[in-house]
Image (cartoon, rainbow, N blue to C red):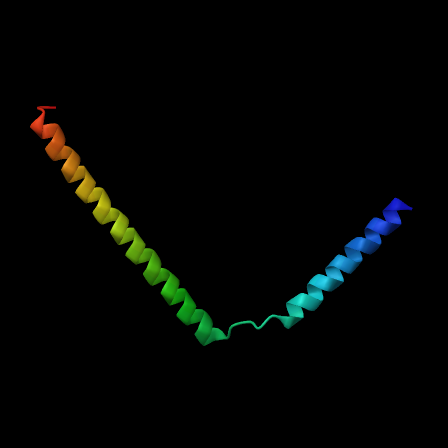
Length: 70
């Protein structure tokens, strides 16, 4: 009896998922292209910021180590 109830529950779950997916408003090609460009630009910006922080921290550590003769 437990197997039948699990199969019924799984079927109900799949039906509910399908119903919810039919309610989704999917983006069109232009929206998808625009969102992708925003993500790419943001990743490039954050990567540049992290790179600058790395260079600056390396320079500062070099100054500190140089001051102590290391």
